[in-house]
Length: 600
Figure (cartoon, rainbow, N blue to C red):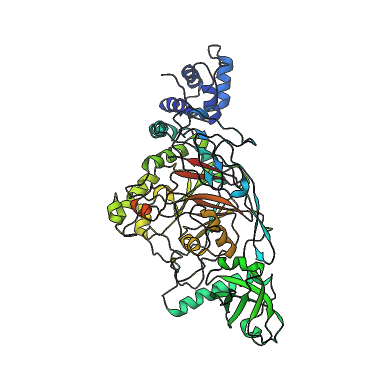
């Protein structure tokens, strides 16, 4: 059998007791008869040699006239990759359905977007911040940029850099999935060799509260949590307003200019259609009135209970109420500039694997894992998994009817087996989600020792939800995303929806808190410190939970919701959830550009 792929060349060398560097393999593959070249190179190798170098191959080719390099032979090994062929997606305000992969598995073509968009493909970047509609029959480059105005400190307009990241989708056919699974054993030892860069890796975890939970559920614990929230978020706002505590404002004469920072205690409309917002700080409460005819009235529907905001304006003549002129959110500074890695290295961002469900997409997962073993995926050195590793038990009504594995420990055992499919030289970080076997209240500590032992494959780092992960200078805030349900339910559809999950994430960044509203859908555990505050601005905000794919940039922060690996369940059908399945966003840490690959 001819040695048509680099993986077969590696296997041939391995059978003879040799490893080889990548350039050596490429040189061998470029000769007319790679098998003869291998024979000649290995015969010339020293008896104690274990590795074939490119210099040895060149020397052999130059000195042996029987070896020649054919001019018609391509040395590009990318066509042998186990990933599906790539086709370019499109961006648009209306999500097109994800189509089936093209039947032509041999095509690997990408073309740039022309000014004349293909039928059915929107190239208007101003309508969306990065939510991708994949049409595998359309080849276009969806890389777009968009400058949108977003209210930062209402009363003034801030520009949100909603730049859509570059996207590539790899359409996976049944044939390519089979090829991926069949060839993984070959590529595992050959194409992806990350050992040369292991010493350059740098990964730090912050805000991991596992083993440090202090709450007992007493009233005093909740007071400490909210006091900590107020103190830390008010520090961000103090530079924008001349804050006075509620007790001091109550003593000021009518007509005075005043500003207050507080947690939102109540929001209600008046009989006249104005809005009354009651703020609370450590000294008391004070009401602010937002007039319906003022421009800032547009942000009232964004305000959530218990979040921290600042209001400035003028006191009424009787000093009993503050007429608001501006509302300020903690927000990400418009001047924020992200940091980048010093070398070309990538991270795969995924979530919601849901092993144990009858709808777990095993073939897609194996295709993804197989691709990670290829040369094309060699820059991917980090895998970040944002919760819901397993389907869990008793999470929603009649869930047992949709389970493939009914025992929670067996679910994690099976997940661990699937995790072993990915390369063992990846750095893996995982946080829990609401389907995982941890407490539902946030912050969620990482798994107990029994489950950690079950998921010990590849020495994965398992930390709490949320967690701040710094990878080679790039800060990634990982949060599973349960509070997105609440944001989407509370805000108008044009500001937050399941179809555009990244827009809901923008509001969490704006509020500098991943779960600002207490007492609703999101359960919050009282701790001495509010671990849900976004104190330091991340370069990347990564969530899951809603099973939808979407991303965009908000004030230079890349917000990514990474979809899922579970096809639509009966329960999801009943609540109109149409999941985006089998996607893997691949982030370039040196540029913060992103490619989305599709494996289903």
